[in-house]
Amino acid sequence: MPAADEARDVQLPAAGEARDVQSPAADEARAVLSALRLGWCLAEARGRNRPGGPPAGDIPMPDHHDHALPLRIERSPAELRIEAQTVVAELAKRLGVDGAGDGTSFGSALDKAARNLAQIRAREASALERALPTGPAAAAQAGIVAIEAGQQAISQAAEASWAVLAELIWRFDTHIQDRLTAASESQAIGYQFGRGLSETYWALDPTRDTGSQGWSFLLGGPRCAELSRLAGRMGVYLGEYVAPAVAGSVGIWQDVAVTPAWRGDVHEAAEALYHQIRRWYELIVLGQDPTTLISPSAFMTNIPTLRRAVRLFWPQLMATVIGLGFLATLLVLLGIGNTSSWAKTVSGIVAAAGLSLATLTGTLKNSAQAMLKRLRQDAYTDLVVMAVQTAPAPPKRSDLRKAISRRELTQATPN
Image 1 (cartoon, one colour):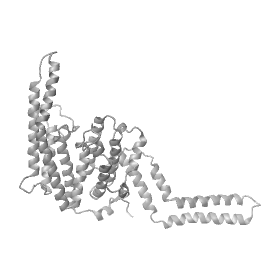
Image 2 (spheres, rainbow, N blue to C red):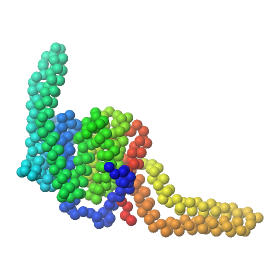
Image 3 (spheres, rainbow, N blue to C red):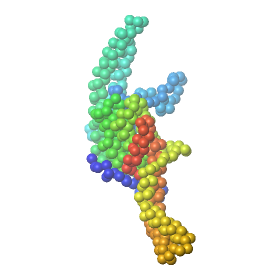
Image 4 (cartoon, rainbow, N blue to C red):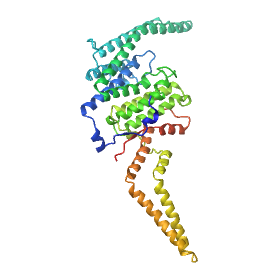
């Protein structure tokens, strides 16, 4: 893995004229975003089918009287699973990665295997419900035994079916990555970026720290660094501040993953992560402006930005301070009658030279305006990251600021 500092100060195309110059062709942009959605939905489809997968965090309908129409968040888990599989199949066809080479459609095969798995689970669950004993006191212990036995039966019956589906999705993912990389690096990057962000939740077992389903892998240093780099490469296809906001919030979740005290209750942390991936989706796919998430009263004291400003403009500051100091000395000497004329002359010359030097350095430094804009952008980007992230409350407020200060992706400033 490349060193972390290789990604430092990655600059994204700015909005307006600078962005227009570097904008990709419209067809390629649509294909890249379709690839991103394909990766996102494939990870979601896998997560919704995975045994013991994470809950969707959705709001159930109170009833289905007269076939009431639900919003997406009100659809049942089965409906949302089918929706994800349908989107995967359609996007795979659109991008030309659906065919397996032997005439098999990956999308159709995935949907068939997923439906088979769902039918097995539904059948076993129904059998379990019928097997539950009824009656008062004596049935309690027997009910617990029956439930445990039923759960084991469901797990055993679905295990083989899930193994088939998991292998199919793995082969599908390999096929997609190979085909997209050969067709377009940008599309391949978009696919990996979408799948990687989505997997932070849909591939996670919140009770595990290690392994491919654990916090330390899905939100570990190597993966988060790669997601940040992918965000930088996708910046040209995204809105202003979106890539730095996503990269910054990914960095926050990296600290959450490795800090048990910050994670707190793992299920509550997983729920917060679900809201985070929904927000990422809104920004990246739905095109929401991240600045609209900033509270009108939001304010953030940015000490690192202040320090950077001092480093950038220290010559002007020092020359101005020296000039003003000797000017004050000259005024004092003028008020003293017996002061020698040479002291007054030297103080006047140094004061004038110091003030002139400050003016000269400020004039000659044509990039001063761009530097000031960069400082404002950096401070504003930190506000955006703060608004975009949904992590649990940290043990100390400074933990959140430290995580944000490590952000290595920034918005470009036109020269």
